Amino acid sequence: MTSDLTPLRSEFRDNMRIDWDTPIQMDDGLVLRADVFRPEGKGRYPVILTYGPYGKGLSFQDGWAPLYAKMIADFPEIGDGTTQKYQCWETVDPEKWVKDGYVCVRVDSRGAGRSPGYMDMCSPRETKDVYDCIEWAAVQDWSTGKIGMNGISYYAVNQWHVAALQPPHLAAMCPWEGYTDTYREVARHGGILTNFCEFIFDLQIKRVQHGVGQRGVRNRVTGEWASGPETLREEQLTANRADVYREFLTRELHDDYFKDRTADLSKIKTPFLSCGNWGGLGIHLRGNSEAFMRAASTEKYLEMHGLEHWTHFYTEYGRTLQRRFFDHYLKGIDTGWTKQPKVQLQIRHPGNRFVQRGENEWPIARTQWTRYFLDFAEHRLGTDAPPASSATYRGLGDGITLVTKPFETEVEITGPVAAKLFLSSTTEDADVFLVMRLFAPDLKEVSFTGIADPLTPVAMGWLRASHRKLDPARSKPYMPYHTHDEKQKLNPGKPVELDVEIWPTSIVIPAGYRLAVSIRGRDYVHAAAQPMPLMHVRNQSLVPNGVSAFFHDDARDRPPAIFDGDVTLHTKPEQPSYLLLPVIPAR
Image (cartoon, rainbow, N blue to C red; front, top):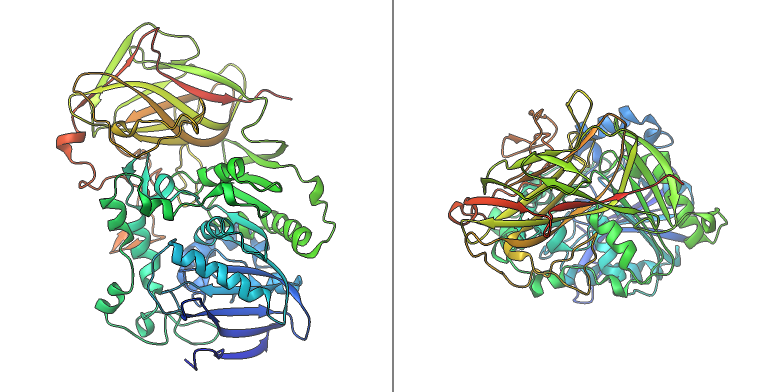
């Protein structure tokens, strides 16, 4: 690479001026590298900026070829007006946005891709880097000083974090499917460790760490090594990155480590469009709605959709929505955004069919919060309170499933869900996995396309019984909020009251269909699970199974001696167990 403050080169191609490996110096002296795509000629333009660890030089087609091919086959419009060769995973296509009068700045995060340094994902150090990148972009001679951020997943998560620092030139942001709470949404669901971070590090992060160099891939446009230019030994690479999964494993409670990696939503004032996915169970759903409810911004919008994690970010539906938002806030153009509903929902129907509807708030004000009681004797779920009953299952087993009668008329359920349970165990703890499911009249389960799994159920929730302590100031009947700051062990055989948060959902249940809830001691796996040759890690195929890569099966976190006792669920008229469902009446 050339000297630290010199771009690799600048060239005009495909109707863009491209500055490759542009240096951006951080406050500690480290120089990060960015690719800058801008209109040709002199002029100042608003900026769309991304910062992340997935490699600015690794194309979508090279990194995720089967997924990209499927997306283009399903939605050919995504390939219109672009050569596609500059398209990277979960970031905007610069060919389309430069043509629309924007500069696109794509930064390799500290320790990733072409940027050196110690990789510590979503850390305060990274957040300060993002802040510095925003303020650097604001004073360049091609910038109007109005900076927007837009991107999926990691490129959304750090938007929440940096916005809480209130950088002066961050004018608008669109966090597309990105969590806000590292503990509750990615590390430990309900206090239960999820293996996802170990999986994603092997699959996606390590292969583009800075220093992989010649063992990695080349940028298909420049021919340079996407994770170079230097090639480091494996022990050097290991020393240059934080072991995030070990931190998650060894920190069961919500401590300062997690506080430092969770966005302070109360300090966010930037206008934003928060876009979540009904199929984002396990990572990219809760945070988008939580931020809309809790952020201090006065100009904030929520959009909820379905299908895969990346699809609608690139379709004309999603890009038109983003353009209207950014043209309004970064260019001052009248796009009709002032008439945009505060909440835009793609209401989900069986068969992955969606009907768009605008609302004024979230949760929806006209929601009829309805209790569906759990009858353990009859394995029935219904609105009539049952007599006293109980059911027992192994703590690491498949548990029980309760089913409604066929619905006589169509019913919509849209919003957050909660469960009230009374549970005892023969041991000192128990993990609860709640899965909401839908069954057709022939009793075949109806699944939905999730962010990375075509067999996603209606909704999921999790809770470790010893983490049942609630924060009374934050909890609501439809959304319990657990502190996760102390363990309250069970007394064997003595029931305790559990309030379980189930992540938001949307489903229109047709007449004749049945809703079910499974209460389990381990992850839900769909009956049709089968190998899927889309993603491979350590010679293992990711399997469409209902939970994608969000498993909770690390025995170090769930030793059988503690979690595989006999678990009993109880209900009685004075202490009923139930689901609280957000039933939406027709307008």
